[in-house]
Amino acid sequence: MRLDHVGVNVADLDAAERWYCAAFGLRPELRLRIEPIELDIAMLRHAELGHRVELLHRAGLAGGPRGANPAEAALLPGYSHMAFDVRRLDAEHARLVAQGAREVMAPQPSPEPGVRMSYLADPDGNLVELVERDPLPA
Image 1 (cartoon, rainbow, N blue to C red):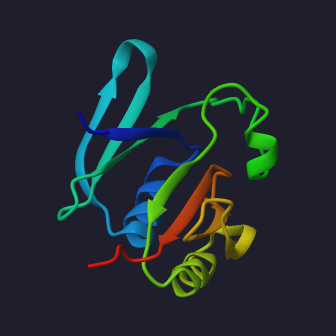
Image 2: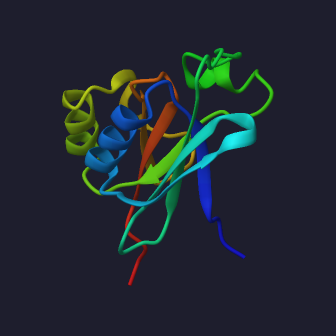
């Protein structure tokens, strides 16, 4: 079993699609509408790695409880954040901030040994963690 995708609610489907594609190298895979509930979906996929992000948009989307940072998010039920494994954490973090992400936590050591991490918020305020792990010994 492997993770197939993560679903994220967004206020502007087209803008979110552009941002996630530019930020994480994803490509549009599918667009559809579920008419009975007026839900528009854009499924994005990474061509090489296969992971997907599903963007969900519904007119009049009301914001629910959302943590502004990892500590707050850990105290709320439901979705907390998504994480991407990166190389060159500092450079990737800076690149995403330049593309419109809000810095939540600058790159720093993680509580997990051999790991560095940072947190950003996408343009809709959804938390995204970047994780850089020490290479495994050969």
